[in-house]
Length: 340
Length: 255
Image (cartoon, rainbow over all chains, first blue to last red; front, side):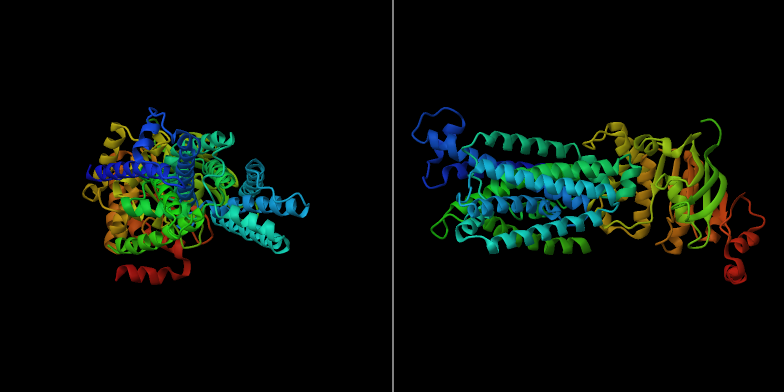
């Protein structure tokens, strides 16, 4: 029972941290909003001067960073379970590189045609979704042919290399303007889509995907024992693998399309949670990873906004700066746990 | 309960394709309440046969009948409620799991997709750990266990699956002699007291002769015959399995 109360406390701490960071995210920005106004507006009883900024910009932005982080984190956990590899994350299947390639094609072709770099979010979302879907269907076709997860993993990594090679060719031949526009996109941002109607589609897709992962908890746990054991526990391994890939692809596609290729959250968060709980049981890891993903992404978004160097930092740089040391620390601590 | 023979092979050919047949025309069965041991040399086709018995490989010809129905006609879930397995592979992924959560996995065929167990499930998990004698280890992490203890956990997991048949592929491989004896004794007791049909493969003939109620012997020509305890002709069994080297083995066993 002691163990369960520990998980429970972890959950409570994460929830409190999410609420605090969420409010801080809404308050921080080019205009600093007093925290009382933030709370009042969230609770829905304020007609103050900041009302419009909060509801139109800050709240959607905070919500999208929370949901995107949560989605990437659970994807990372699924990939690490499916491929039985602690280095797997949503980008490992090449799905986000598919999005990146299509965004690159959109940006560079539009400049080459002389109509100026298309930075319209709607076109970007369409391109990014198309890119990830192309990779997804390719992977599903491969998955039907190959039996082992390792072969699938290697196919995913190779797809990633292939697309990044194509992207660098585009970058090399592209104009200065197009390169700048493209680099800006790769930096990632949670504020890109808040003004568009597509925002709700993003939120719905992500939340539906995250909820779907909860329905896979038994499958993920069984896969820890390997495919043969999982099969003997009544799991249809092949079908489960396809479902896991489709959910990961949809979530990754949604996040990449709306926020850009956000690095590191998917890889780092499951390690952090595993370190926190000292458990591999997906019954605890799935909910806690979803919470921790939201929490850490909010923290990164907040740091990005704090103007440490006098200006806002790109979110992608912050997630890597925060994520990498935490993963290294968790691995060091875990190896001592391993020997015990 | 019905008749004792629960798994029957009829004219079974095992292998990976028509051109890669490993064992031919196997007609054998396993019984409830008895420990059956498949013995043979390394590479004689033990693993292929075991994988076919688990339903992981399809028979090339012939059939494996479980309760009178072909094993490949069972759905994943229906099969998992009738036949559980203990495999050779060492799994590092479960190092951070507690013994209890590994044994709880045995209940997965019976529970919902969130893997939440009922009170009845928890009772069965407790009972399984008690039968195997690992109830004191319940809260420990798998990484802290010895190989013998890990194997017991996997046996408890299979027991929790509450199946009439348990198939174990080389469960003794990584164990030292005392643990081997302990596991064999445990398996025999489980078969006798829990009315399970247990099939295990091993190349440890001496232990098999000592503990198994029935033997499936793969001889050096990859033919399979069965024999029941007591084994009056144990030296001819050793001959069949090891061929020319049998004299050495017998000397070794005497010493």
